[in-house]
Length: 468
Ligand code: SAH
Image (cartoon, rainbow, N blue to C red; front, side, top):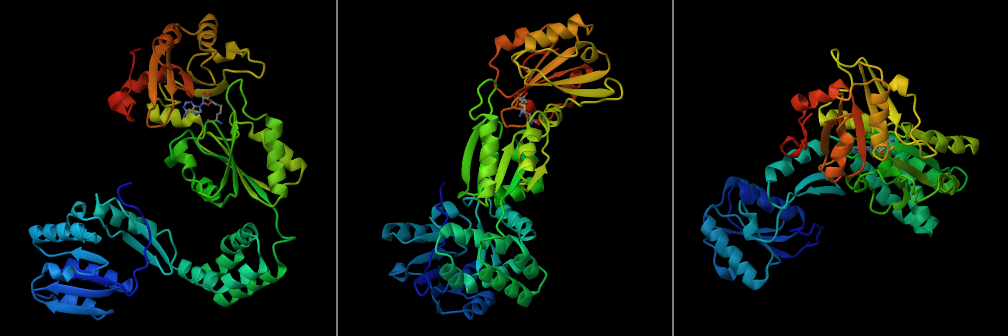
């Protein structure tokens, strides 16, 4: 990180803007909003600067800049239209250890102004480390659309009730639980609907009732998709951000875990083939315990929870105990890998059916209905098929599929380092011994695999390792 993001209180401190054109005026406005005591030095003063100066404590000095102007400044903005002058100011500031922003050449200084989304007292600052202010602005308009203006009202309400809530709940965790109920429940709904008095009445009622009885936990059984965080559903993302505690599997990618709140408790529940970091019974017991403590528990799984994900087993326990839960589907590996490898699962010319099958049975064997699997005109997708790869290919051939039937191993599908290993039923197993296989891997078998050559689009510059 080149720039440390922080909000600094500089109210009343002296700041200097050198230059008085349009850009300088924009910076002056921002500094005056922050309550700084501003001086502007420039030989010519634009009308926008004259206008900006009226917004706060601002002294305009219509004359050329001199190094003496820097004396005692807490912050300087070099915003003249002469890059050489701006650079000189930046050097002088550096020598005096004064933070300085240089317009158009942020690298010359050490301060950048982020794009701001204002929902006072909420402020969201966006920076690209000075690389692309335009991108910051685009992101700003994108994000601003998702953040209703009523958040400002909600924050105002929270500010007014903060002392009362603090007095009512001594424990930080209790306070958080209370605010959680306020900010995600009916109080917030009323604010967003523009009914502030009702919102306030609800809040007061909640405060009187305390956290006690109404406080029930809930489990969110959420599919996180095959790895690319952009493939999360909106609901998955919302629940991820609401959870107090998360139990996640090995398949949940790092970039998805980064989307969790910083303060959330994260518990690794493992799930590696033949080496479960945590037995299923223990996972079930933990889910029940956390929910009974009134916590919102995110059970985060790779792909879809109901596709080779044991989601069914987990909610069975919750149902027995009457624990509320929601299930959120995710994009299963077969769909993610098919799309990102350019291998359609069905195709009018090649495959009229598609079968998802596990290559790894509960007892470790690969006993499957080979007659059914070896039929023509269908696509087979084997989950957990790497260990049994040789057996799978051999059995399919033994039961009638031509040895030249194309087959692909999609490794780390949808992730930035996705790779696709192409072969056929007679060659694929041998090919895996010649290259490093990075899990997780999905085996796809059928004529549609041939389409990869034509349809591959993701990471095309580093993809194919062998030809069919
Ligand atoms: N519930 C998950 C599957 C869990 S079983 C889902 O719906 O996707 C674990 C198997 O899924 C792995 O052995 C592998 O075969 C497959 N898998 C999961 N993510 C994958 C990925 N990103 N790339 C390739 N295979 C993946």
